[in-house]
Length: 357
Image 1 (cartoon, rainbow, N blue to C red):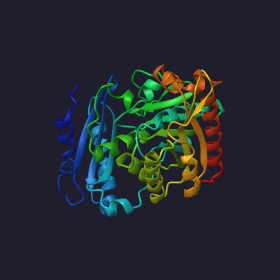
Image 2: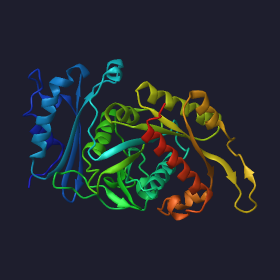
Image 3: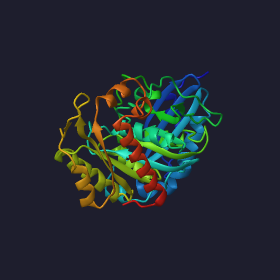
Image 4: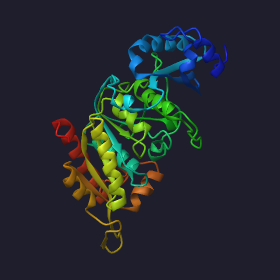
């Protein structure tokens, strides 16, 4: 069997010509190779002028076919990306990916880190599944995938006959994460095009309906308003976004930026969640509003978006996440679990009614 490495892939791609007759390798970003028991998983990007996207589509198809035919390759993911994310790229209309067997896609986002976005995504997904909706959970936080640990999942996903990855299952959830494909302590030192490629692969090259069609796919985004969020907004048919914030002014400022970004790229905002809304002492029952209180509700009213609910600050959220079990499942009678269930009900109502801002 031939050894698959960067040079062997680039050598194969030299057989593919760009529309101008030049060498396609000059346009290649990557490739990235991941070894799996089934073989190599190869991803790459072709950097182009967005105006040439139509001419490069058959080139991309030919490049993927050539790599897929190499001995030792189990899966391949290629995409077209703009060399520079200038105004033309941001304003260009992109064809959305077709995600087979998924009815609704809900992104969970935050303007800054540390506000409990991933815990919200996990417990929102678990609550939706508990309420009878077949639910998937995608960890799209490329730089800091935490969902595998929060769900107690280890190992590598299997590869289907069509060379797509089969999501893993736990707690009634269908789950995929970049954390399944790399070692836990491996840093992801990637530029924008490779982030774009990785996120696209997590949608396009995963058999999301392998365990049956999904009612909803919850996507845990990385914090901020960078490449990952832009890729999601431009390439994925998002039903809408849930914004997570804490009550204090600095977090709300960043949440406002995140909301503005989704609106700018025509992604509906389902609503805002106020996390760490207050602390309820487990010993005396006294309520303390450590990070202030009510800021997210006021911000939602100001911006004209639904307020989905408030989640108290509780050590049980951290404990259950570290133990690899969603709080909704581990401590179903808790106040926090009840808050997540109410938020899930409101999210489902918003996505099914189409009442999004």
